[in-house]
Image 1 (cartoon, helix red, strand yellow):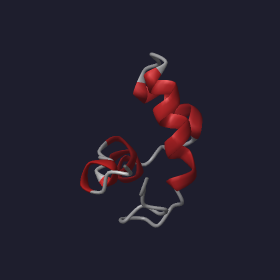
Image 2 (cartoon, helix red, strand yellow):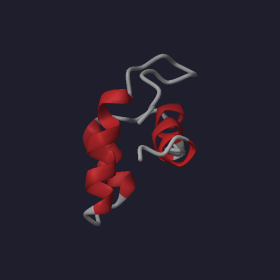
Image 3 (cartoon, helix red, strand yellow):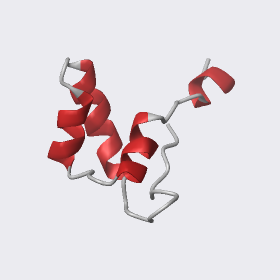
Image 4 (cartoon, helix red, strand yellow):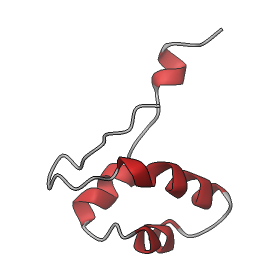
Length: 63
């Protein structure tokens, strides 16, 4: 999975929050609440996490 390590706009490190965000949202939590809990408050950083689309598995299948 290739998630950007830093926000393209402000440079804040956001790559470490992505896995936690995906797991909690899949468990049924509200994405806005999850991002607030993770400390992602800037709208540019929220955009990076929410809009990420993991296409690597579709482009290069592993088997």
